[in-house]
Amino acid sequence: MKIYITGASGRLGHAVMKLLPSAISVNLRDESLNLKKTFSNATHVIHLAASLNFEDARELWKSNYELTKRVVNSLPKNCKIVYASSISVYGKRLVEIPATEKTPCHPDSAYAKSKYAAEQEVIKHGNYVALRIAAIYGPGFTDYFKMIDVLRKGHMRIIGDGSNRVPFVHVEDVAKAIKNSLNAKSGIYLLSADSITQRKTFEIVSKELGITTPMKTISPDIVHALLKITKIIRKLTHKGEFLTPEHLNILSKDRVFDCSKAKKELKFKPRKTERGIGEMVKEYLRVKKSMSVVK
Image 1 (tube, rainbow, N blue to C red):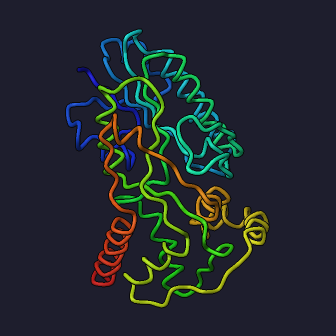
Image 2: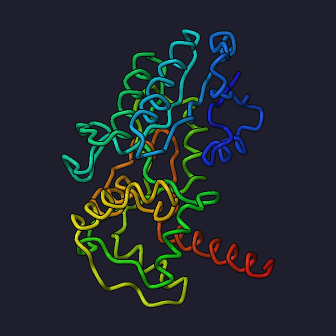
């Protein structure tokens, strides 16, 4: 196998490179790079490079769709592409619960539309695996620390009644599925661990922190309105970035996925979400402790 990886320097890419140390990293930021020449001997390309700048539709389309199309058009005919897509392609409200790979997609955000369009380019190639991945957490995903900070300070509110189920998946479990995708049948696969309620998520984090679980609630509509009002402020100050409209949708919508196909064909074995979140909070506490020691 001759494996190339885009986005190898990212958080998911870092986890994948640990499992595939001989893979070759490709820097797609270099627009002068001749991708056809670069991939000329590739048997597999793992395409992870993408933008998560949810509030810049132009950047999302360029980085997620146009760049993917460029990669696909540069692949040798028999080269397999493994593409990191997203559960966002289903839209905020699932047509059915649990959703499967066959559930109709209704991308309804700039990010979702860019990922879905990119998927279609990947599918056209024929020899592909497209992984629709839930919200990833784990080592390196320190953006969750901002939300834990807010909760720890007692400022967190439950959005809605908190009974909605939120899909998460650990970065190391995704990396293993990506590795196993190299020899898998062409197709789309869902990657998500067990979905737990928003309220349960806060209970797990609060227990690890040794604090009282937040009980106050706030309407999702009010949060959406506040995010629109504070959009310019967030851009200027970089404060409140832990909660964007896309993050709000992740946290407040009821979404459950059936990943039996990936479990069977990719040997996907996601760890229990409760265990994984507990590990994440312990990492947060270690980081905070080390920072206080340095000061």
